Image 1: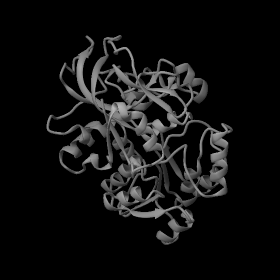
Image 2 (image 1 turned 180 degrees about the horizontal axis):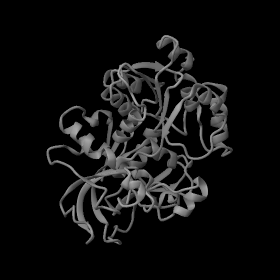
Image 3 (image 1 turned 135 degrees about the vertical axis):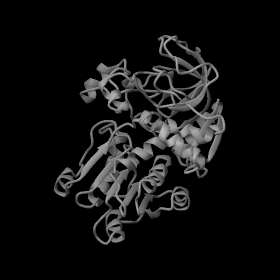
Image 4 (image 1 turned 90 degrees about the horizontal axis):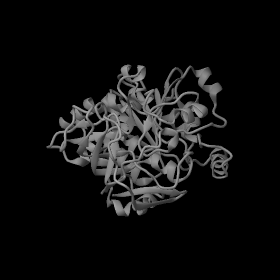
Length: 389
């Protein structure tokens, strides 16, 4: 089969690789009908997530048709159309039983590697380094799905792929980010980053009762989408004191909640942001926490900071004293996608939201390398790229 493979920093290539096969009774083989390039994939592309190996198949947002199931999978059959969570979960451990699916104890075969770095291992992830299990990803013609008896969700025939695909990651991720804000009627929520996850966080914040959402970015087309589709107030951070602007927009109190939908590759204009960039490029640090610093400083006293943006290692000069002094609450982590699949699918079916609004580019799998370059450099007004194998 053909698959998009990581070949090194800033290099992916479509290669012919062996077809996946059933190796466990709880496996299924999915013929991928639609997949996508995620902002998290750029962390692999840029070389900031360790333990990638040449030839690794990338991609964790995908859906498709079941073509084979193991003998332990009774809920799926050949021909079923499914969307697959990017987090891999066994369904039986303490964490899965407590609805903490992305913290599964049993789905990372390289748990010792993660434990050495983080103390404990979270779940395995599709196409996201050997630190997270070394699983082949979904930017391919076929993919093996472990624990298929608890992961993939069958979807109605009447919904096109483009309305369903983002249940695999970015829609639940944006929704969980907003849910983690513990929004009350009348709340003001600030969202840093108007990429796809930020766009879904904006819409989700309103779904959950926010009165106002303020969206922060510098890319004109992303700000326009946040304003037009998300009904957000927008703030271009270039040439702007973001913390002061947010105080001014909230009567001096600050947003009730702040969402960092950017993560480890944040951009900014401050000296700190410039130092972050230099240190990360020279591998003197793992992450650029500029947005997180702003969110902590801007959030009102007693407010919440929600972090769906991915961080990979150790953060420098985070104003934790401010977080302590203001009594902030932090919520973060990989998305518990399984928890949200059915409720969010119901919203799509009812017409509450059409997730395809973020798609700007539709490419073939063979055009994947070009797609990564377009997405990384934000060319051609790109917000979200989907790939068809």
